[in-house]
Length: 228
Image 1 (cartoon, rainbow, N blue to C red):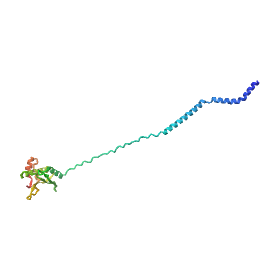
Image 2 (image 1 turned 90 degrees about the vertical axis):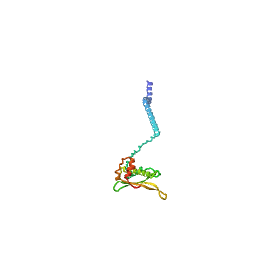
Image 3 (image 1 turned 60 degrees about the horizontal axis):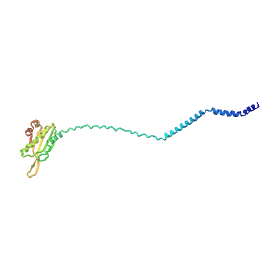
Image 4 (image 1 turned 120 degrees about the vertical axis):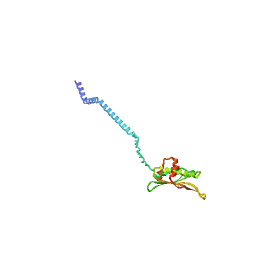
């Protein structure tokens, strides 16, 4: 009993320290190592994620912005509407028409190489209608009679053109010119035949008659010869 008592007494002395040591051992054993490791791992993972995010952010910031291609805006050309100018119809005056008729009738040159038409004058009369004065150069021919026939033919063509024009011709006078030599040997153009035909006589003429008969017989017998 003496030894047993000493043993328990000895253990009693070590009891407090043993108890403390045992508690520490138990706490270490019972400590949630897995949770701690998990926490540590989680913390490490979170830190890694943060680091990754930081790297991503850094990478994103480091990437230069992509320049957008310039937008080209095409503007349609303005539509131009062209309005045609109004057509103006110019009606020639009777004076111009009559002058043109005589110019066409006596166009060209004579066999003396002179312009056939010398002049044409158309005047409007006070009481209405028109008076016409025509001068032309005659052709040369073998005889005086042939010259006269040629002159009458030309005059008839002038009267036909005037009185068949549809315009109110009241009177017409036609003169034929031919180069003449005076006693001094000088040559000059002079009127050799003149005639007149007014509306009153012209209205009686059968203008539909045969052309040769009208020119060489009918009209020379109707007009008034003032110089021959």
